[in-house]
Amino acid sequence: MSEAAKILLVDDEPGMLRYIRTLLEVDDYKVETASTGEEALQRLEKGMEPDLVLLDVLMPGIDGLETLERLRQMRPSAKVVMLSCVNDTRKVVQAMRLGAQDYITKPFEKAELDAVLDLCLGQGKETLPGEVEELADDMFFIAASPAMRKIRSQAALVAHVDIPVLLLGESGTGKEVLARLIHKLSPRAHRTFLKVNCAAVPADLLESELFGYEPGAFTGATHAKPGKFELCNKGTILLDEIGEMPPGLQAKLLHVLQDQQFSRLGSRSVIKVDVRILAATNIDIPQALATKRLREDLYYRLNAFTLQLPPLRERKEEIPILLKHFMAQMAERYARPALPLSPTLLEACQRYNWPGNLRELNNFLKRYLILADEKLAAAELQPRNDGYGGAGAEPGAKSGESGGLKSVARGAKDEAEAEAIKQALDQTNWNRKQAAALLQISYKALLYKIRQYGIAEAHHKLSAGA
Image (cartoon, rainbow, N blue to C red; front, side):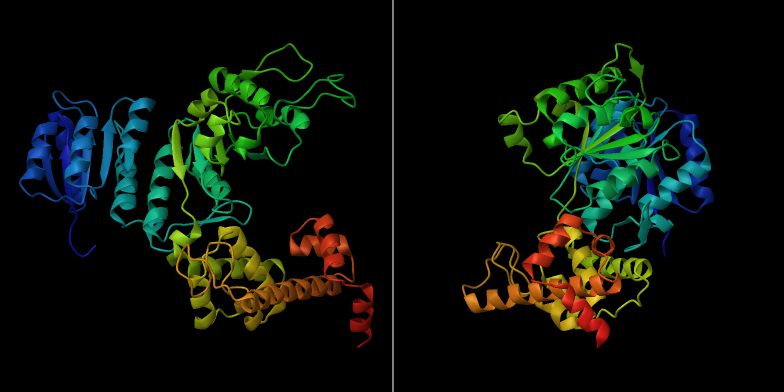
């Protein structure tokens, strides 16, 4: 920063005030102090505009949480870090909901304070705009928009508080990526992270998948098998599509959340576990509660803290960064040279509204890499009749009524998809399982599309003999 940041330090302990002030002034921060919440608010009323407020939670008179609430009303954009000698989960969660950026437990080392200051004041590596934060399994997190920077900050804060977190957002917005980020930033980072897709596992098998079973628990259970909760002990589990979990199993999950213990199917012995639970869904929560699809008591248990991921159409400034990173990843995975992203294609991508969010963007780029045809790629981004508009359309606008344009767009997309399938089949010498893996679709989906587009093995033989 070209000018030293101004910090308002609020703490009722004179010794702590002197200690923290010394740490800050060593790094040339401009520091003002207040010993009560009232004094801090008076300074703001008189026009002080600090870059950051370090605010003690437990103070006489107006405590830290009330001070924070009033401070946010006076300075909505103010960055606030809470200080406390007690790691009280309820107060941490309340502070986050009121808009605190971070939370430090006293006593702390200078390195801890420096890390928080770097994160909040933009001096640290983690907050550089557009930087890619690598996670496991070729996943990455980008916080180049104000909305995603706020999500990143909240994730960093909630990661250190061992409470359930509910991740909401449309399909394809990156809820699993956010869950992995929370795990990575938490004290459990060196432990196991497991994801269970509640919609992908048949309802009658989901209970045994989560909690395991003993021999004879059901037909075919010939040996004992631990469930995901046992395998994930001391780690983090993501229950994806939690709204698809059967109501009876939701009741058992509620007991696990309350007591951290359960029994395998067919067993009477109790197993105790220490698992951090994250849950994700794209369902309409009020409707799911009203129709009893989601148990109200489970929802309130999971909803200790909620993070709502915005759709890609609301953070379009991230699209060029996402495209570049997806392209680099896929080029390496498929051993192909990365293709250029021309200004024309980039503009079309940013004008398109991506109803499928990051998943649609990833698949679009995959087809572009395989076909290496910019015109076909651009044709996919034509206006569409689904309420999201498209290239050249305003957000939420319906596309035009011209059947000809719709037919052209659909035809170009089908042609691109068929060509990608043909190339994958050629590349794998018509090994359809390998082709499905290359295209990252299921084997059954590939067989369906081969029939849909009338792709015959004669195409491959003709290509090979040409």
